[in-house]
Image (cartoon, rainbow, N blue to C red; front, side, top):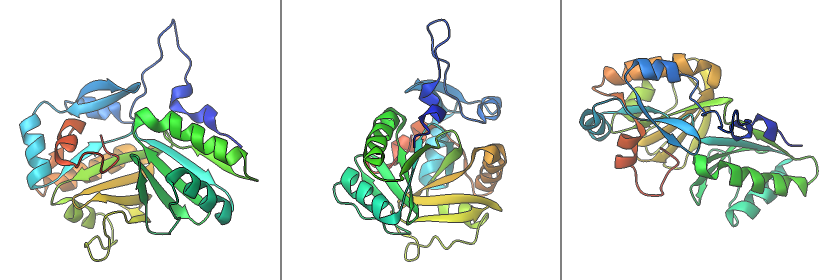
Length: 248
């Protein structure tokens, strides 16, 4: 079964031009001074008018960035089928609860033994979806759900990222309890969500898109109390390792 009709890139062109894909809180980000650029058909925040301060926040405290443009594709099937498909598409990667695997810029995150979420840069979302659907069509009772617009996604970058999360949830993010590559479905700010540690000081937070404004407000406010702020993708890119994470 395919839910590709839910894909943001399935939108029809109007008068020869495809509508831009937008964050569910673009209006709020714009009011906060966001500057946008286009990336793979999405309007993406590059900065908030002070690139120096944003880079400093990511290096010295914490920066919070909206990454609604990340692709989010969910594979559902019997555990053995999910394991087989993931292994096929990742060159032998295993489905291990609590552990995400990175392959060619795509994170494979087990939500349960029968559900895996693939997180991709926007340029690769259609390709990953095609690969998943081809593999699922060859299996029995497998589905690929297009969740890009259903989940909001923010990233926290910087040495105070863990402390920012600590103000909103009970999950222990100390390195010996939650290492790079660890993934957990967890309540954040009393809202169902998922957290992926992509790098030592880089965390991706996924949540229902309907909570995007609330989650953004909670995390930016917490960051400000720690000397951080809202940042654009330019600052996040500048402090993350090349090819090491799905980020901006």
